[in-house]
Length: 390
Image (cartoon, rainbow, N blue to C red; front, side, top):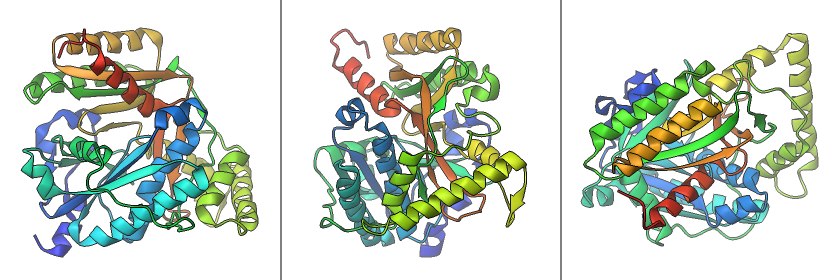
């Protein structure tokens, strides 16, 4: 594959728009063999969340995607947001660029968010040497945005290698700043309207249950689809525009170094104020329509994904949640799947807006009280139980 063809691998994938397609093997194609997986996560995220730092944890995870994509010129490469971390797949020619971006974002997370971010870069050749793979599908969340879905076990293996201290990227010196242009955290938590916000992780129990696991995925998606807008945690018109001073402060930390943030905060505050006024009046300015933007925001969000398993943060009522838990428990008992879930009252929104006023703005959704990180912790606890049947 030529460098140009390798760069455009993800853009050339066919787009499917019905989420049920995540369970269809024909929608996935293997990453080129010369690609790399840049992965990172927060050390001790469970403790940080218990201390009330869940917004900082989410921003750290999103900063990985922002830093890497900005470093490579915002090209269209596959990425997955995991709440307390992220993964970006890239052609091997970007190895040093990705390494520098990960090193810089580790320093920034330590300096500004007071968290520890570990990072690694794993070659696809090493993934396949383990008999695993990373196959990618392209789900069109809206006419403007598509997200990568991953299967094959390779992404999970890469994360495990990172946690074991292999393929490690060392952080840059304190004070190093990545390019986090477009990283935004100005939204308040979005309250549940249906009952509860539930973050779910379901993964295959083994490599021998693919068909049964696909059926399980279909059942869960089907139950969630019974709710309005498939249990989407954001209202169709988008979240309300509010003055979130803490969010403005976090965004300013991403945009400017200490000592240069006052005017950046004023600029962000002014943007929020203008957006609020335009939203209330229904007017546009410079081609920007606040109400349209809010609708696009809801459409462009990643509230459900497939990353070596099904991950969803949904707004669902108690009876439907009980049915989902029942099918998950049955799948666990029969050795089809392992799962974890976490319930909370609201969802959290972290954004990457590469081009101001553009339509290709990306929005990451997680539960506002730990979400995916706590669901993963729940999954680990079940795996440690001697009574678990897999």
